[in-house]
Length: 370
Length: 228
Image 1 (cartoon, one colour):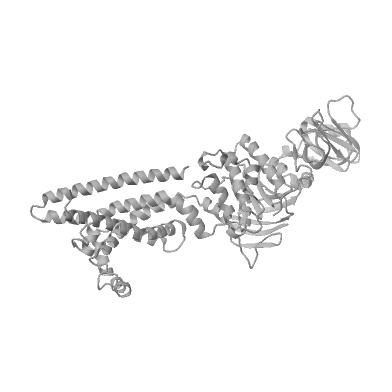
Image 2 (image 1 turned 30 degrees about the horizontal axis):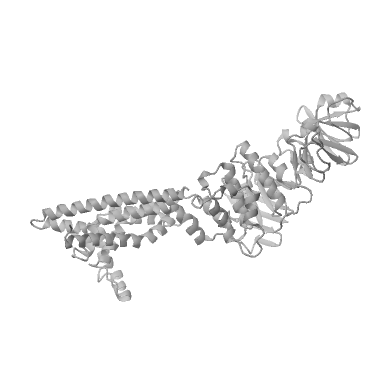
């Protein structure tokens, strides 16, 4: 459990952030730029002076009214947006910097494993100047991990990278999350990154925490999901694959008695998936349609309708105990006479999950604990 | 090739310049750090004070040193009583006068180097478990090294030629304080000293050129090492 209640004053900006989240896990700090994400992370790290409040992680207090552990003794692995590798030390020197200063007792991250996990073997002999942006961030990740951290802070580690480089680094972050049970705070303003990585989300706006929860819970909370881009509105489901990818490339996920099928290559039964069913990709029908290319014809009940801008309504459909969201036009709603309580079919293309299904832990993975 | 007196002057010039640099380097680093990183009330005053030797006539600097560190000066008397160290009319005194004159040059170069060090790197070192002294020695100092070298070389080169402050504070004593410029000055004051003066001028020229070349070579080596 990480528990923070911090107030920081910097000029005109005032941060009053209070949240707690389960550990281990990846806690995403999500919000627009200027919401105070970096300030909060720096306050937790002990790099920014805190006016009042407390930070606790598991049984350790880093700051409260009586204690204020200096940053260098908090044992935090901090990955900065701009990597901040030491230019005079080379890759190996950077990796060794924190490792050498970590207490000998309770080491749980081994150099050889980090090098293999992050694909650093070919970089070890290089100087820092000869690295690409993505390689720099991988080295920075390795350096932070080898300091044997109690908490890993990642402050938009991908923000300075272009899309291709981002895709290059993201799988390493996923591997790291599945391999080590180190609590992580991941700052981002890209919700896709949050969906791929986070187990818990803390939403920040104007220096305050406006909500916390799992991505699935936030996707269904009308008040909170407003803070996520409108085109990203859609139910998020954390599910287990019941049937692995067949030759067709389709995997099956059970939603109560209904079966959701989606394209996810190379995923075996038992794997945990997070899928985002975008509201704009869901079609509602009041009669069972036939002869369609759509792979998912899910029978459910219309649970609720809410306003969604001037042209649309957002329909919540209960399917096998889960909820899906469908964005439909006002015209369609009145033509079909859609009212809560009505039985409906939700149509979702299996292909619409491309880029919206993320592996969250392979089956039987046993993470290394600090 | 060189006469005994010429060797003596050359040796003294080098000894004075080297000692002045060694004397002022730690203090110059500390003052540069204070000026760049510390926030305190007297910062502007300290900044002005450090630059004084640049704008004062060297004779004034020598005179002030004489008042303070002379045999009857407060600091001079104390040093003599406590440690038996005598600065007035000694090589050590010449080094002190040279150090004071070169101090602003050194601080300026080191300060520029420190300003160029990204404080974010020190923060990174901090999160990796490095305390204040540790991160200064392992991150800040190595990154400042080219600037420190530049400052030391400039102060050394300037120190080879320091005249006014030295002659005022410690006089012109052969074998003790008569460095190259003082020897050159003495030769010019002596009838038939023209040839000697010319030789000494040539020697100064050669020494300066050699110093600059060596500095450039060192700076290149260091830069190459830093940007591996």
